[in-house]
Image (cartoon, rainbow, N blue to C red; front, top):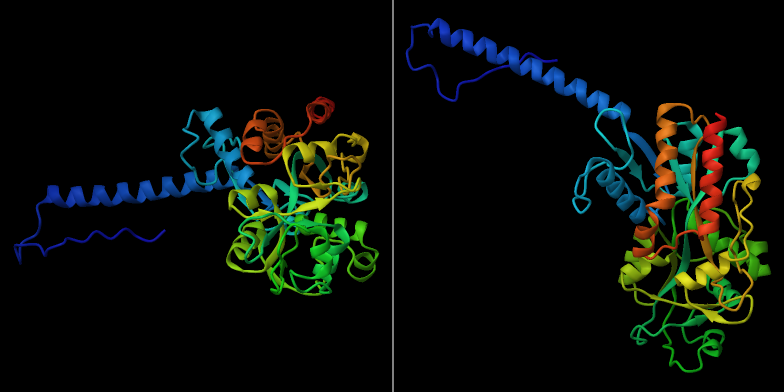
Length: 384
């Protein structure tokens, strides 16, 4: 630590005379106190940083995780939830609940939790059992959400389009380039579509939302499956990339002719127009709580498979065809303090966090699924 230097704003007014001994003693005491306070502050900051739990990953669920963090802090400490608190959310042993979450995309979050660099990761791309065991991780479904196809079509004034999976794949393959293309017009006989170019937008970073969207395109289009496939990061045939769900939302709003895939909750919060998609039963369905729950209704959510259900093009007249499950990943060494606190937060999110999820436009897990997940958490903790 550098020596503390005290400076007078004006020079000592009596040249050639020493300041009184009492004043010199006061100055020395002030310097000593300043140094002590700096040392104490640095020590406390070090302790807080070591206690702060860290998370990273999904931008799809970031607005919800951020509010959960504030709500959790409010319940545990009595702090007003409406007041944002920096790095707040999970219990720590020094300064109360504390979470530092970076919305860096699912792929980066998975990498960080696998390396042990963070305590929690959120992702829409579930890991297979072999990878979970390899990295000593647990995987939990936390919340659901529709992956919306957001559009900014000139002249439609907020009117929603109807799109099918094969046509959507052809748009992202670069085969359908105009909004007035006959393939789109045939699905929207009541709309006058402009002869305007389609501006294809996609994620530039490794993304769980990309994983779900391309998984859907691969399921409904043999050409997409053969030429592009699905993953958190793919080689896009056309289009411009943007980072994060929020980056894509802003890009769609600012780009006439745009089309992109984003979290439905964020699209609607930004006032974007979202398309209705043709589902497996042949019905056109917009993303909604009811449509997401309909897609999840037939899922098994087997604990031994780490709950990694695929809710793509699910059967049923009311099912929305692109549903993302947000998974949390954390260490399976839950007997340790940080890991124990991380699991406690996830249990809270599944219960007390449900109302906020619904308020923001996400969809809470069906109650039977929530009960199964929380029971598995409890059994695991008791075994350890």
